[in-house]
Length: 603
Image 1: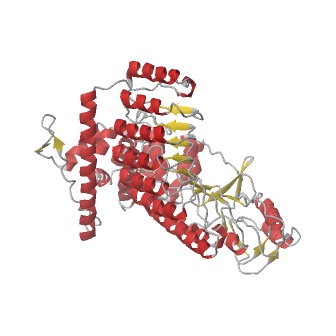
Image 2: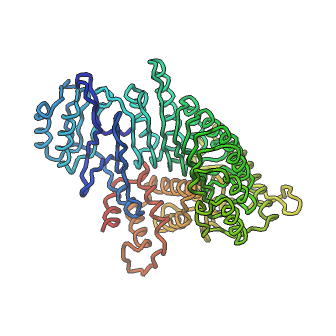
């Protein structure tokens, strides 16, 4: 079900000329900080009205703390106080005194409903104060933003795992007149997925259409949606919306699993947003195709100040194309990040030479590429010649100079593999449409054999493909990110099929092996999460599976619970914690296990 928005109330028609203030109504006080706790994790909602300063919320980044916070989610079963539809006029603190008294007298208050009332700024503030004392409050339901006639300029719902259903929860708000004045939309780390991206794009497009009909088109300036697994479909849908809006100044979409088709769509949309100052697409997969498309757009933009294409696999040819764009334009460029992109020495030198006339440049990041010691020295010399050595970021993670022939051959093979994978995915989608019941019957088709290129001729060589389970067995015996990715798009299904989910110990073993290869790199992260989903959905969905035994064995292997069996705990908890943090947010995860797991995460 869609998760409701926090009640953050703004201007009503009878509030007079004074501008409304930013209101953040807390649902739960944690220490000295005020946070909004939703049934899907810690919900921090910041709604800023015209003229108000930006409010930045810093979230804890520790892995164990993230998991503990996620586990704190609960479901509201009762304890609801409702003023829905009472047509109350709550403008002042005096007007709200009866509501406040009921809040204070309500033991075990878990939910507050305020739809269908007029709540002014002063009244909302004292109601918020009363709610601070209600430690059990979990949800505040209301359409107050719309009914109060608020005019938002900023909406921030970042760091909430609401998924695509959550987007449906605030879709009506985005389509309403409340958001006609929206300048900043921040939805970072919300797990929207491609489906949520499409819903969001449609809502923004409709908002622009409606606001244009009233003579004041939506003029969105800042869009933030990193770590949302938007992938190509979600990115392409949003690109269409961006092209219609045309007023963007900042776009932040890092870590979304976007490949060159999505990057190309975004590039085309950026070309229709001439005021763009910041483009952050860190940790997506451009390859040469995406980089060339983006470079073409960069040549047309004159206001860009910051470009972050770090960890985007632009490679050498893509870097040269971007260097050409920098050389021919971008007069206001202050920061260029092309780190960890598999760029060779000559291409990196081209980038350095391209920034020679960028008087405002403050940082050039080419760390983590393949320059070699000599290449790093040459890069510094080039920038020294322009008196710009200070702008060069550290090169401490340079991976050394690769053999040129080997790298070119590797790039060609990877590009051909990408094309083959895209074709395979299209074929699989068609097969799934033709046979929709196949997955339900547990009879997934085997992964099509991948073509392997003959290193001498470069032509596809015949391969005697072994059954998929053998490949899965190899991965489970000696897990690595590369082996997981080589299993192809059906890896999650194959791993689940290969695991005896009636045995909790075997499920724990498979879970830990899959999660052990977790990397904060789009392709690997997605593959791990998909495999965990398939495995655990199958396990928890089986009546023969003992969930409590699974949790006990998992805690033992993670070193959080002692056992008489003297089992050696795993050395690195990062991957399992990341996988757990993902798993506990999914619908298949038994909510009854959350308190037990939380107890071990917080002790």
